Length: 458
Image (cartoon, rainbow, N blue to C red; front, side, top):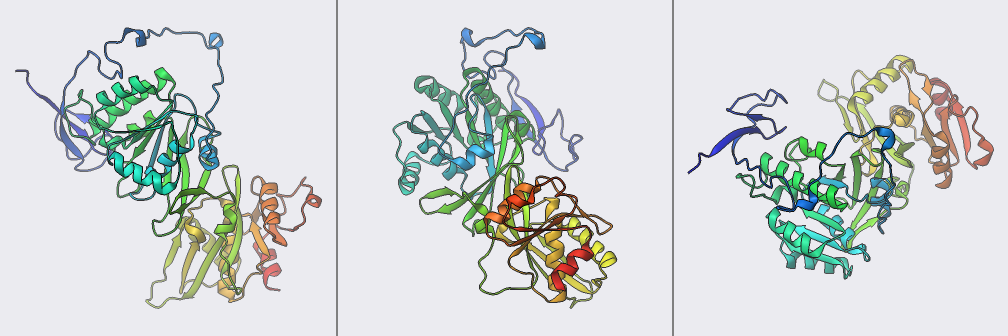
């Protein structure tokens, strides 16, 4: 009987060690090494088709000039939000990983995509739900497709046998942590299993040109569970975000070899599935019956999409001695920088004041073009005077209190104009060479925070 070989793997980064170590030398995490059984089998290892000689390719170096690049047409779905995030549609032979919290709607999104591809044969492989559970969800969404096939299986060898028989055009795996391969003698979800199963699916996708979608679990800190190499192996990494208690979901790209990594898709969760939101600015602006202080509207960009978003702030005297600085949806360090600029350049006395900042709609933003809106909201709360509801902002604030230009100002102005705003305050340097006569909105150029303050409160 051959001796069983074991090794230790880091559950955080996937690094391998012949013995247990307390601190991982690769990622620096403590107590992450777990012993796993390894079984190296050279014959057929990592191949989705064992014993098939026609899939064996021997590559040789070629000159870059001799390589012919052929543009493969993308598969356009009926979901405009997913197409935008992927860069224009599904790329043949691509491997896409979708991560998100439990119950956020990952399985619902992928089943919905499988059902709306009426002319495409889709195989939906589930290792977490039975076929009857998937059927119940499909009936609730009221989608019908003759080309959607469901398989409840976790063994990759059995899955590839069914793939050979069915020959699907698109493959969905729900989820990668539930699959296991016979080439690795460890439990499903371990580092070795996740890496081996992903390698087999990647080999299948590249050799057949079939796009593969993988649903992945996430850890308690929000990162995708399993080894970090999983995100390096796939072509696209999508994060499905949102509050389970709210109806809106955000599909964000963190890696994309076939498009931009700044795109954003917004969905509304309903009883009959996910509905794409064509104009997200309307849902990100709360409907207020009265004008409140501490509220300002900023024009931001997410990829190629301009958005108008509501910034809410509250400044009140500190009750417990040490003032609080709390930020929800906005970078806390950038908030502290803007507070320092307002105190130094604007004369605000915030040493004994609690400051709270919130981005309405549950969004997470990092566009510096929202600096001006954040400062306007803080000034409004500090002065206890509301900002005009017909006014919005787009500009970056420097440490000297200067208003700096932001990119693609025409798109931001056009979005504010479309939503009925009367005025927009921007940097004077951003509108140089821009034909403002094409907009119905009044564009107010400023160079310093003092000028904005005079416009708002005098």
